[in-house]
Image (cartoon, rainbow, N blue to C red; front, side, top):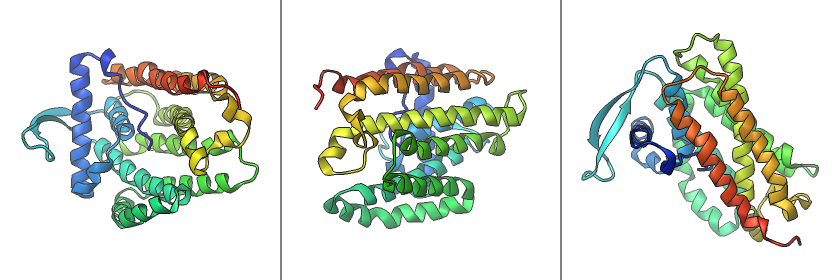
Length: 294
């Protein structure tokens, strides 16, 4: 993923941040268990949010236990423990998305960076194979996304909507898997929950792709890498174009999420959607607001 989906710590209660951190540490531990200790280095906030979303909706509440960090034995940690597949699913999403992000980097990066990517590719490929045995549907979703993304970027008629669609569909399908894999606490019909989560994932995935593209625009143009804003005159008016577009994506994500029965971590999820993402969006757009058009 991209690393933009995280909490706004300043606007969280202390106990809420501790809960979020315990899920982050639990996912780190799960990745080491399922794949390898080195896979922990690719742990992302995005996949922590995915784990938290599942745990919030799952029938069984997680428990919390004390332990020590594997990377810093002097540091005490609190880990979330659960009988659901939440952490395992999030770990699978982590390694699969990291592998296909690496493939994307190999296609877009200059030659000197590709050398480093080639050196670590066998590790990522090994994790992907392990993931495919546990959750073949997740690997297939990410594989399809990667292929569609490369196809869109190679299309001479590619536009912003076409470029953002593969990531949006990927997150839609990954969120739609939740009712199939985890027993939920809600009384809502599973198919209804699936439709809601799919809609949430689509708009949120679109927001993630566009905010990442805006953040990387200057570097991508400098190095000749693909960026959807370089396809038209949007690059001269990123702030003007992005503000309504991203607001729409976030509002649709929020409206979809609020159709679900309230989960146990609702306040933390709402912090991400209504505070953290909004602040990140403002910070990135602000970079372009005072720049003269070229």
